[in-house]
Image 1 (cartoon, helix red, strand yellow):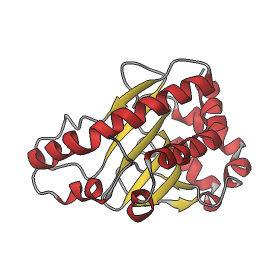
Image 2 (cartoon, helix red, strand yellow):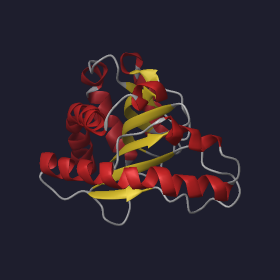
Image 3 (tube, helix red, strand yellow):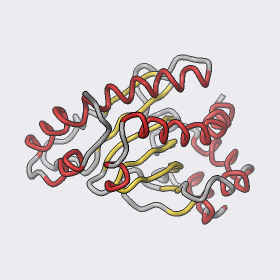
Image 4 (cartoon, helix red, strand yellow):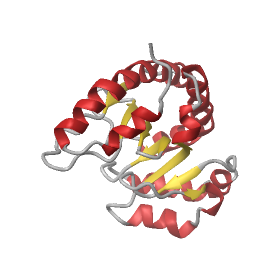
Length: 205
């Protein structure tokens, strides 16, 4: 029975060695991603009025270093998510993240950046517990109200620059949530982010 994430899930990232850590991710975290991700995929499809697809990170390119985080992604493309605006839920060793993500593989991300520059005041007016990251590989994030035009311009102009907006829950916070409470928390975050997802799709059309 899936009951949300617990401290043992976060402790997976302390396991040494690629094979051992990947086995733990596959056995303890990915089954939860499947259940939670299926629910969230259906929810987003209903909210958006079009089919969405669940992708669970495989970390297939890794040959030596074990992953420092793992995630599920939901996109409107069946074959992949990295080249599309997408939603993520995932874990580092110390926190859970909930993102609307625009990563560097996204073609024409400059169009998204221009749209967000035009809507920066609305983005900064999101609830105070929303945060922004500029690199999906790092834990760092800033409060949404600290977003600057310069940062969005960098996202527009620098090929490797990324833009992720959402929430981070400490492992202590996340570990206290039942599956139902976790899903409600994620859905609430996604509801606030859906207008920006839809704006991004329009900018890429």
